[in-house]
Length: 124
Image: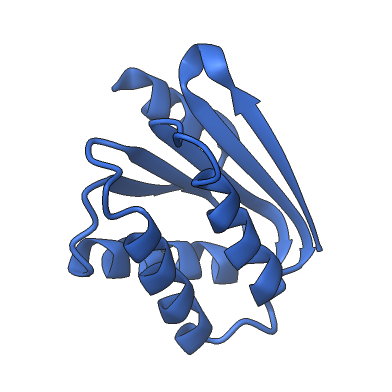
């Protein structure tokens, strides 16, 4: 799995472009990298090139719980998930529900294309 991190300071945006088989440790490391410095207001996870066939719903829950805990001070933040495959999109929607149920102070929305996600992120 590869996770490319792109920071767009002008738009206060951090993008993670994930390709290959999703590996839990690398995903947690990417979340940690958000908070190595003051996080950007907008975060985009582009999972359209990721293979999540070996990911379990319990792993998604654990990852979301970890992300919500790390982002507990990210008030008024926006996170977009891009997933083009049906399995990945289902996990993205599950992540959105769990994020909301976890009381995250940021908004999370799911999209099928990066263009839609960026448009949403930049509209607020």
